[in-house]
Amino acid sequence: QVQLVESGGGLVQPGGSLRLSCAASGFTFSSYAMNWYRQVSGKERELVAYITGSGGTSYADSVKGRFTASRDNAKNTVYLQMNSLKPEDTAVYYCKTTMAKNGRAYVYWGQGTQVTVSS
Image (tube, rainbow, N blue to C red):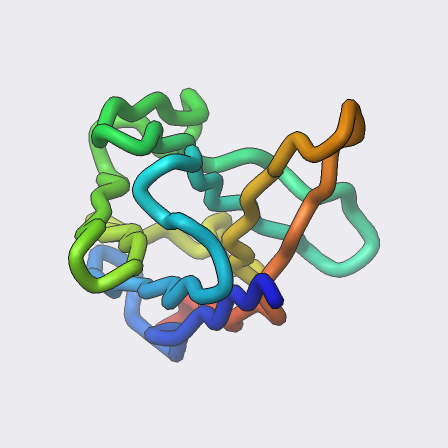
């Protein structure tokens, strides 16, 4: 059974940093790309970062240079280091993975972790 569990959210002042974690289980973690999304209430989820199984990354323009995605395949965990946080980064952050099985795509989400950037 695939499980994704995020942690590390909280309240931080503008300019501060947080590191989010997403612990994965139930699948061969190193074989799958992982994504970080965020969602503000009333808006669509926004892709923030993408990391391949071997650690290649790409980022949304809005976070490039401030956020860094990484993964530890030995710990089945993906991270999102967020620096120079801005109030507009306030959102619920989710990790996600997609698996292809029998010709179908299965999408798995974590439960999300709230990040609030405010003075």
